[in-house]
Length: 283
Picture 1 (cartoon, rainbow, N blue to C red):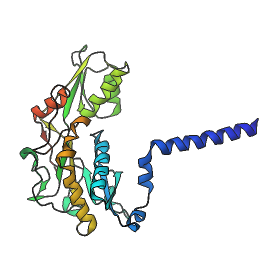
Picture 2 (cartoon, rainbow, N blue to C red):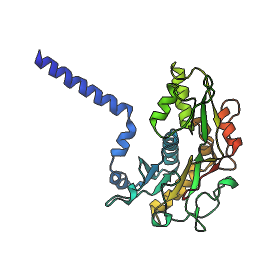
Picture 3 (tube, rainbow, N blue to C red):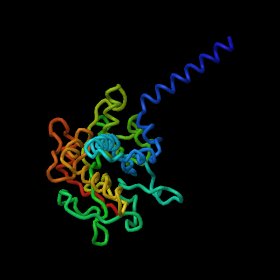
Picture 4 (tube, rainbow, N blue to C red):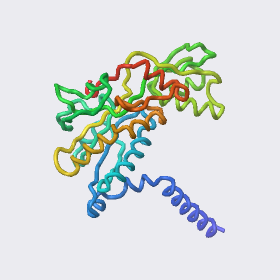
């Protein structure tokens, strides 16, 4: 019996491993050494993402990375989640392109390279990545600050989202309102669909400013990686990439991109009309 139980455990472990590899193909990409791609003639572009507010931002970046690889042909993009100052650790190979939230980089000249040219940004957003008179980063998408309101409790008492416990308290109806970002509204909608959380609630834009900005900046100065980083950055600002943001609950930043549909995406449309002032990248 013990032999059969041991064999069964081995079989179940093997099946679990197969399922994991099938469900998480991106993990294999992260594990693949960059040198293998370089040996086949492709330029490996290391893109790091340092933010915690978009929720769907990595999904958008992954889709745009695949589209860029297909169009470029000679570039392989490796996405990686990062924490502030990961790039400063000893022995770390720095990214070629860094996407980050405001405040993650304090002194851009120590890591980034200045950007040149017209990026087609909305006028109100053009200065977000300027530091000491030079453009060091540009926004690629926006979110917004919102307030979730439990209609039965009339929005009282109100809390500011600082930890997961704040969200759980709102779900348990211990608080009547919660100020946070769009990701919380998406989570609450999913919970409501499963019969959990407040029976009646709504979300509304809140305040005149927001930290929900995703900036992009290049770190490579010369060579193929530098050129590929600049190309991918501009690819993220093309109409096709920007037009894909609203479906994921994010706002575009360029002048020519399509905005949210007022009927299908009322909260996102309200945020666009509210025109909250985004925080600068290096503030």
